Image (cartoon, rainbow, N blue to C red; front, side, top):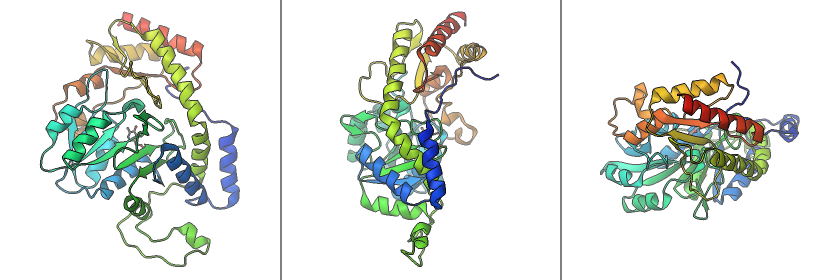
Amino acid sequence: MGYTIPLFDLNYGPEEEEAVVRVLRSRWISTGPVTEELERRFAAMVGAPHAVGVTNCTAALHMACRLLGLGEGDEVITPSLTFVATVNAIRYVGAVPVFCDIAGTDDLTLDPVRLERLVTERTRAVVVMHYAGFPCAMGRIMEIARRRRLGVIEDASHAPLSDCGGRALGTIGDIGCFSFFSNKNISTGEGGMLVTGNREYCERARLLRSHGMTSLSYERAMGHRTSYDVVDLGYNYRLDDIRAALGLVQLGRLREDIEDRAAVRRRYLDGLGGTEGLIIPFREHGGYVSNYIFPVVLDGSTRERRDRVRETLKARGIATSVHYPAVHRFSIYRHLPAELPLTEYAADCEITLPLYAGLGGEAQEHVIRSFKEALRGN
Ligand SMILES: Cc1ncc(COP(=O)(O)O)c(C=O)c1O
């Protein structure tokens, strides 16, 4: 059945259409001046010295692992409560993911205490993921990383403009990776951004993004360059100007989008706070965050009951999701050692409720009422 209340909805207006049409009419539709403009504006927005537009966040994560020189036999600590791309990127370069548990059912980000216990002489890096846009314990994680000489990659897919002690998430570690997938705060269909404070990483990321070639097709088409060399084993991870144009309009909407989402979050906190048997992760967090999703965790519950609650909501036309099935339980990762009781509990008992800027008060009331009834009835 179709949902009357989706999990997410785009906030597009006519500006997105007009921006795309402008690029189409310019006769240059792949990586070019609009992508460069998006890179400049994104870097300025998050306060990063360098930004490189890419096809998606998975590509950014893969390149980040290459930039840190991770490879065969290296161990990289990462959460299991994340989208599988965070972990796959580690495997792409032949390194070994080492799964770390989350801090708790009220803080679904990486636990720095467990993280430090997992460091061995083979550990080279940590890939953190800022769940729902809420910051991992970056102060402690960066302190451990510096002391143990580990690289830090931030999967900031959920977290554009989220603040952590005055710095934007994605700019605290060595490299930050953002996603512009359709359901993200900034939606371009597919798309992503790699940010870094390290000029060499940026220059190499530009090479890796485009087959290791020393010039872009755009530069050749404009007559700026007539030839090129290939100096690195790269990929085609380029963002095109059509999507970059969408990204620029979306960037302009981001602050307002975050405010609207914050209002939705406040209404959820008012409506669901105090509900027996319900944990609202990050409830006390008062900082500025992207509010990418609204996760709740059923307390003292089971996967079967969680699934029944979701079914009840589905029957009422309300879409929900699970963020995330634990990566270490997937067939291709099951062979790796993993002691992750909190992650497993969250993966079994978490439900993501609808959250997007255009979610109206009445529709949200319906979600809150239906959810409470589903909890009581299951
Ligand atoms: C936490 C996380 N990491 C990585 C990704 C991958 O992003 P993309 O789809 O842009 O490759 C996503 C998005 O789906 C995500 O939510």
